[in-house]
Image (cartoon, rainbow, N blue to C red; front, side, top):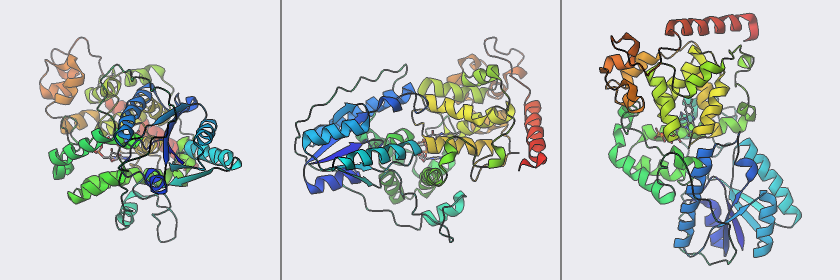
Amino acid sequence: MIVVWHRADLRTLDHPALAEAAARGAVLPCFILDPSLLVAPYTGNNRVQWLYACLLALVESYKAIGSSLVVGAGSPEAELLRLARESDAKAVYAVRSYEPIGMARDARVKSVLAAAGIELKLFAGDCILEPGLVKNGAGTGYKVFTPFWKTWHTIPMPNLYAAPNRLEPHGIASLEIPKPVTNFTLPAAGEIAALNRLEVFIRRTGLKYETERDYPNLEGTSRLSLDLHLGTISPRVAASRASQAGMTGWVRELCWRDFYRHILVDEPRLGHEAFRKDWIDFPWRKDTQALEAWQHGQTGYPIVDAGMRQLEQTGWMHNRVRMIVASFLCKHLLINWQLGEQHFNTLLLDGDLASNNGGWQWSAGCGVDAAPYFRVFNPVTQGEKFDSSAKYIKRFIPELEGLANKEAHQPWTSLRPPKNYPAPILPLAFGRDRFLETAKNYLRQGVS
Ligand SMILES: Cc1cc2nc3c(=O)[nH]c(=O)nc-3n(C[C@H](O)[C@H](O)[C@H](O)COP(=O)(O)OP(=O)(O)OC[C@H]3O[C@@H](n4cnc5c(N)ncnc54)[C@H](O)[C@@H]3O)c2cc1C
């Protein structure tokens, strides 16, 4: 018997640990609810509920092949030891995790299991190409995306693993998975839903991705981030299907996901500080009122507010809008990107340390291959460009309903501005100049 320990890989297709275990004989698939990881700062309630939904779907996947998922709760080392003893297993197989906290947990589990004569074996399955595989000429990891991508897509992707057709029942009892409770409807969860999302996206968007991906009112992106986050779809399955469909531009986005994971493995400190060390002590402002206005979509800048309300109301936000709201927080409001990162992490269904941290550091200008710090997105022109019909902002800000499209992006210019929507929190030119002045002075002091 081999215990297959699921973590952020809630699928049976292209699951190397499961396939290798099934090739050797009987399998006991399990998931351990670790209470220390089901709370802030690691996750938020939306993601806990999404986890339950994906686990319930995994139960169905195992049922369909004659087995059952065993859910335990407690510390993974104690629970795995119990399950291995109950089932007389001599090995635990899992997909390797690359988050610092996951790597520390796995080291702990490995030594506890080893002391009991049980092997913990980890398999590559979280990335398309695992950290360590993409190196520059000097044999080290890349810090810039374009050369990473150029090397990355010349390396053949490992073969995909089929899902097992049939597993023997194991007879071990499971805890019941809580029913997900959210104040919005969760998307369909699980591997069948994820594969379906991928196919619908390829059919609907396909090669139009490059031209539609920046427009938040269109269904121009895949929304697979939720599935990739808990591994209900393997990134290799997604990449190989998209490659067959000629969607190189989309595969390049999946490569960003790999890139940020590789970076985090090379520089685990990024989880709590800026990549550029000269930005670590940047003089951010403390302004709780402005932070709260930003969090709740009350800044008076419609594209920013629509994005923040989309996040609050659906647990997801379009990528273009993530960049706009992040720039607005760090630059116009001069508030620490880490507070934005935390807020995203609390609400996002796809909240993921590597990609969230990478996105925030990129936006603030302090990360690897980041946008230059002096690039400050203007939320009005961004809104007019990427939501010219104003349909996106009106969907999340009903207060703007009566305004013409152009006015809706700057309601304060209307002769009849909506009474229940706030005036701008600050003039854009003031915020921009204040940020640029602060950054220039700070960097001039020789901290850079
Ligand atoms: C400030 C900020 C925070 C972000 N936080 C997260 C996060 O917590 N989790 C997360 O998965 N993504 C994050 N992103 C990246 C990106 O916004 C989302 O991956 C994307 O919006 C998800 O929607 P989609 O699946 O429809 O994307 P698609 O456009 O369909 O892209 C396909 C997949 O490629 C990957 N991808 C695309 N863009 C990026 C990127 N810039 N960085 C890393 N991977 C990318 C994702 O896995 C995504 O699902 C963040 C970006 C920014 C600017």
